[in-house]
Amino acid sequence: MPVIVDLIDRTVCEVSTEAATAEIAVSTGVVGVAVIVASLLVDRFKPAQSLAQVTARRAVRAAAVIVMFVELGVQASRSGWLTGADATTLDWFTTHRSSGWTVIARAITHAGDPAGLAVIGLLLAGLMAWWLRCAVPMVLILGTVAVASAASRMSKVVVGRTRPPAVVELMTQTDFSYPSGHVTGTVALVGSVLLAYLGARPAVWRRIAAGLFVVVVVATMGATRLYLGVHWLTDVIGGGLLGCSVVLIGAVLQPYLRAWLHGAPMNESSKVVPTS
Image (tube, rainbow, N blue to C red; front, side, top):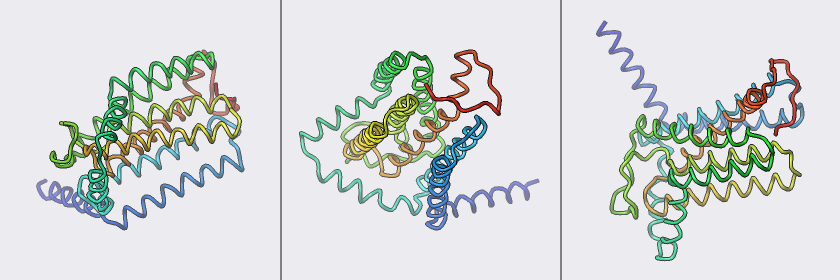
């Protein structure tokens, strides 16, 4: 029995060590992006005709993002190849501070606190539910933010990465660093709102504008966390991946949630209907 335990321990250690290398990191990223792009191209040129097809394609995209998040977490926990730019990025932000930018960064980051996200989430969820005359967006938005928050807390404990040195922090943070909870929550919130909005099938230019707005919001939140010296670059990217994965899981569950709330029967061969 001790021999088996020792073998398992060495195997896990070897796998974890290899997962922190550049080869595994690059391979995981390339394959993950390729899977997502291929899935989107299939959606574009061969639209799904049944609920089963929609579910499968969305699940593939969610799985790809989750795998990339896990790989980045391993890299962060073992100071792997992907963490090479963390110190340089943090130094750049800390050397470009000013009193004015500090006030703005603090205000933005406070909006991404759990309390701030809860208030903003409730307002946006209520607004989307009223606009679409449907309860699905409210449940989707609030559920996505709640799950993302819980997943972020669990991931922090599992990875156990320490924060940047206290000397560079402009705000006191006591929990672990990976992933950024602020970025995770922000992506979950604006991503789920975008998902509900796209379900209303707006014009193409409105979709593009909404997507760009989401990118700007997320990038701004991530930049403030780096500016305040409370996260590493990989923490911010990890938060984006985690939040995105929860949103994609929400996309998988969205049609089932709609059927459940509306009391409509559903089976795997159900025809695809417009999201609302």
